[in-house]
Length: 268
Image 1 (tube, rainbow, N blue to C red):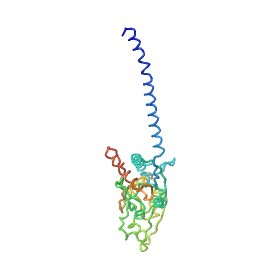
Image 2 (cartoon, rainbow, N blue to C red; image 1 turned 180 degrees about the vertical axis):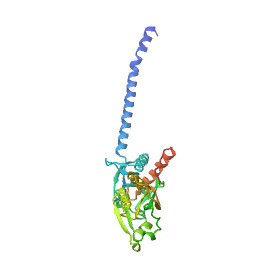
Image 3 (cartoon, rainbow, N blue to C red; image 1 turned 90 degrees about the vertical axis):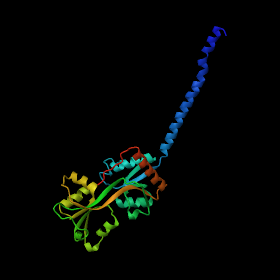
Image 4 (tube, one colour; image 1 turned 30 degrees about the horizontal axis):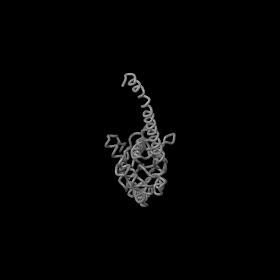
């Protein structure tokens, strides 16, 4: 081929490649658009779990903006996200929370394992998220009570909305003890009542009591530990795909732990 013709053939190659490049660009743009569309569909169709809780600062509580805060709330978000779920938190008093688990309007509660009244209505996750102590507090300088004898005729301070286990309820409801049950709405006022001798003993959980005691600049209080409560993910049996939710949360917890994530929570 003459030299001039060879030059003309080479000069036309860019024009031949241009349609191919345009086709590749169009294909790439279509692929990106398809991925974005699939991601948007996945986000829009993500299952949102209704998570119930009652105020238990500092582990889980409602901040000034109405948002669930605390290390237990954050752990629930992390594990649910790993399991592929979104979460919507609802703060409820204890009795309403249990009723919501029983009717399925709450899917998940990060709470106390082994509640007898919930056994027929809930499934429990395998993993212990934390441990909390239920204590009987008394004033410094007073003797450690013998249970149940030393409670007879005494005034016992309780936090309204909390429920307990059968062995504790048996003491509270024992008519032979003639207990006076004084209920208050929060841990700060409960400690103030005990300090001001408006009650003889306080039945309360250690984590919120310690936070309240520090806020009040109170000295440490002596106490008798009555029981230790393991905290698990509790799923309503009436939630859609309840067994799949429990399994997904358990697997997500294990995946995060095996990846070296710090899943520890304050325990008593």
